[in-house]
Image (tube, rainbow, N blue to C red; front, top):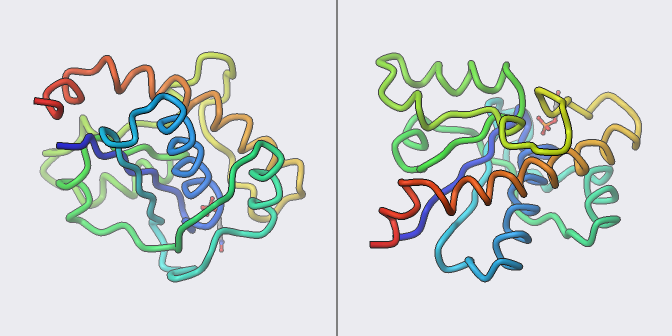
Length: 164
Ligand code: 4NP
């Protein structure tokens, strides 16, 4: 069985597709592509079917990442399906838990910045209405958080269990 990660933001065209593609890059580098899979989703329906934002593509390409995927909306079944769900900010976190009225999946949902080891930001800021600098900052924050996340995942009980 693979260990399944889901990255969630508001529009699923900036932060969460970046997190998904950066994480896939790190997983591939670590030779773990057969063991860990990634997906991403948005809490809104604003951009369903859209490709990642061009400004996000520019920022990602500076670090050798090509953003792939199309925006989709988070659905209640995602909470059951994925092993770990990473919110980009607190609003995303609350919106994800809105689908979990009974608190059944609460422990699967985390803020991605919890896994950062170099940066101190608590959230990945929404870059949509800002300049290119904000998109570059998102990539920097996500590289750090995803590096820590991969380390966490491979040492987690859930990952070990998924391998058996
Ligand atoms: P994301 O960024 O949540 O990182 O994909 C946004 C994309 C679109 C909008 C807001 C944030 N929007 O308001 O359309």
